Image 1 (tube, rainbow, N blue to C red):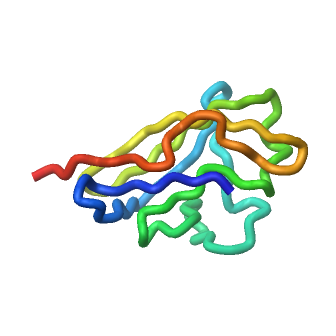
Image 2: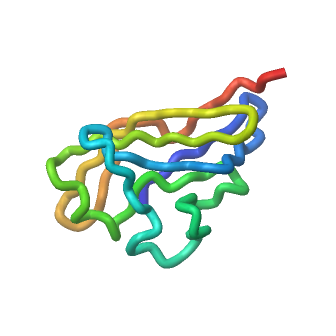
Length: 111
């Protein structure tokens, strides 16, 4: 599983109301709940959003990559902040791997 932690500068988790992952080349949204059996809210937000951790991609979607490597755009928002971040994903025949992209995104709090 590939994920990202999103926190405010004081390390408080950022809890998003909406999050999505799209194939950056095609613009197609990736259904992260497909082939994933736990921590899936049904709204497409998986991982542990209450702690600020969001799943970007997982082994169950290995065959969805197509042309490799693939750039994925993670987008998420709530009432006060939004974020977009590119990740480069590949696979080794068994597991997906992150080739580029942060482990953590730090958001400045808006007053």
